[in-house]
Length: 504
Ligand code: ADP
Ligand code: MG
Ligand code: ZN
Image (cartoon, rainbow, N blue to C red; front, side):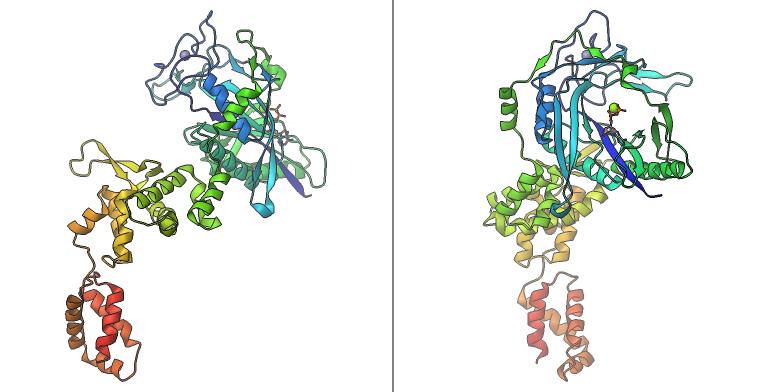
């Protein structure tokens, strides 16, 4: 029996507002437990929530990027359930009138582009965190996260494979990060996803019973959990069994999903309109204002990179898949032109793009730093005193002079790459490193000729071979001269001089 996979995705994005959804408490991560709380987010009786305007603006911004319609009138609702991390006994969410509806996102490239429909996106508040480690026999509750604004984004069941679902999820994350509404960090839980997955007989019109998957904090786990679930459901169905509608938890250690709870229905939550908040009116003017202030999105940036910097489609897409990389690239170009390293943006764009996407990316894995608009930086243990930490800044100014040095023949290509690594490792400038370590290439003809003479004197046999027509020996001489110079000879100059000298 052939089965078709059907997937719909629910995602929760923590919004990057400074304060919480319904009170003024800070949303900053990492503070001591329960220090960022107040009577509102602690769920004390008699207090009233106030809607965070910035969160509404971020929801509209996201709705616009997801091609949604913004409901002119929307309403908050209470979703009632009991859990220790939810002190009010209900979560303020949206139910029958969500803020954004009926949108779509395109995944895949030109030839294989496919639209994934967005059913809705609604505002709600996050819960606190239960902590089960630290004191034996006890669990603790940290309510700093309680009340953090969330946007829940729900698709139609339009995806037909785990790869499609992951492509959608990546696209969604890019959009949220470009919009500056969510940091997109799945490991830290600021973007969480719950795939719903079912199987049906190929060709069937009806959907099968779905299972919801939780506890997924990376693209890798999302794919693995869905693949496991396809195998499990295929086995159940082909043995004549039935799929039970339930929520299953992904266990990354075992590589399996296991039942968490049987599926709750909407009526289990006794949704009702939130009586403490008036309806939220979204006017066309509000939407227009947000639209006018939308940041540049990946497609637009891609197009601009091709036009403004003369990059190929491919290089532009590599640079713009990550907003921070794209911003770092633009900072580097601007610096190169302003500081006179290059006459025009186009002249140096390819070199800079290569260095960022190949050399710096390679070093990123080794040194674990991030590229940002202000430059790249990372924290290291103080290399000298081993006391405390210091920040290593890798601004484009520090490595851009390497291009000019290479062009002038002062350093070789391999030396330039080696110096770049030292820039990243130490935060020193390339110019200082080249000077301090005496890495300047030898281009001086007199010095080079002297080396060549010595090499020729030491290798009379090869010289005879070359002069009797065995031209392959030329490479041997180049190698010997480079070696004699400690790798610092200018290879182009060596070639030129050798040709002349060997000819006799
Ligand atoms: P529930 O009421 O159980 O939460 P919803 O209809 O709200 O279910 O859908 C939740 C998510 O599950 C949506 O993303 C939707 O696209 C997806 N979904 C719904 N039915 C199926 C199905 N049969 N197979 C896979 N995904 C589904
Ligand atoms: Mg649901
Ligand atoms: Zn509060």
